[in-house]
Image (cartoon, rainbow, N blue to C red; front, side):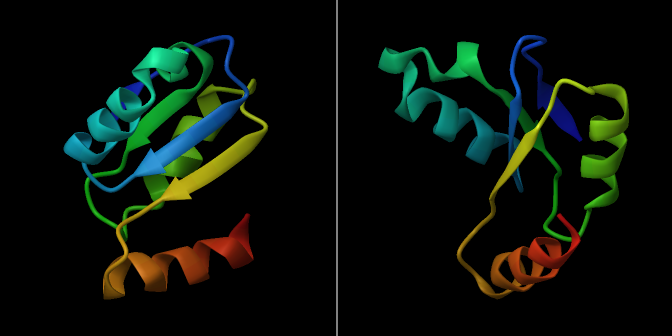
Length: 85
């Protein structure tokens, strides 16, 4: 688990890998996207316990956006996590 935490953010973007997190942040750098949100790389689609642990220690987070890969594992986890959140 690798995170980029913005203590003022109320939205958490969850990605599978660190490179995905960095790509998402850099795609919108001109809008200072990285200064408005928090980011969490869970290092594998099935590691949702990282999300719960992060949320326990960051009560400011109100929204979680799953930005998982569009492969079989990512789709499966998106479907599973939609039922949980």
